Length: 359
Length: 107
Image (tube, rainbow over the protein chains, first blue to last red):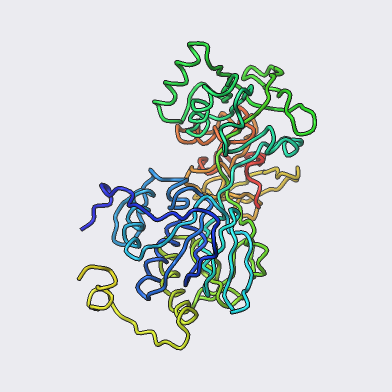
């Protein structure tokens, strides 16, 4: 028996972005719980899978929004956390060697001359398969952006929501906004490199790891970093270069603060993204499917989990598991045209047990 | 039963019939008010963020620790910021006035 509470995150195969097109049987968009269980169900039918996810880790909302929160309605598991469920699913599907393409968004979908789907990601990874499975939950996780009217003109030049190259911040007067792990980690990592780092947060309490908070407080006490309490209310600059920002203190006083670059961490939000432009029937930003095959209006494109809708749909992980199993029955025929599909139980089928590596 | 008066992101005011078996967020969502509520009550995102009319603020239970942490991620925090999923509706809140914050914007 596997004990979920002591199971560590199993190792996974993460592909380098870009490279030559990869041919597989099923491309799963979204590596959340439902996408991971789809890998397992597909594996039992010899369907090989590649997964694409915008996050840098598998687990979707379970890993990003509530890794420590308890889930009580997974059949047969009285209680587990989001991360424990993710680890269990990774362990379960790991036997089928899925390949993960992380930190990239599924962008462009087209049909190839030989009737396959070709998916291109935001990092230039190209995947080809007869089956596309959209298991994207509430959409791709993307950073929340500053709601200031001119913020966009600075984005990517002097305003950032993530760090791609640390060198870009060398010798800059840097303002980092936020109180979570991203804000604190980058404040600590960039402090030796930047000309000066100021951390801006709305209150003098931080949800980041206590160790990082302690390090930050020691740097502030030593005068090597500044901490300001308040909120950003305006950005000033020329073209794409920030010159200063207005900070409203918690006492309501506006202060102009000079800086070259701003790094803002307001957490993540979910957006349907490019999938909305693939010609699929949508109902209020959800993808309409049938309840036999969980196929969309486009043959070979399926949607399962929170992102799909049909009469009576419930956004529960357990519903997504059921949808994954039925979807695979149809996907099999696209992966292996003309081949007969025999229904078997893992409990009794020596063939399935061989695939699972248990005999 | 009672009412919640909500101002949406366009400044439009709506009166919603509210049920005391649901949170303020659930009542707004149920009534078709455009509120993202991505995690749907798990206190894990900030997409049900509302500004509570100051006159009503004192009638609410104070913010919990988890709610306070999630409010660190809102785009514009105000003293009357609350996550509407963390406010259980009850008859004493009949006439409650809230304004949707930018974080609630659906895609």
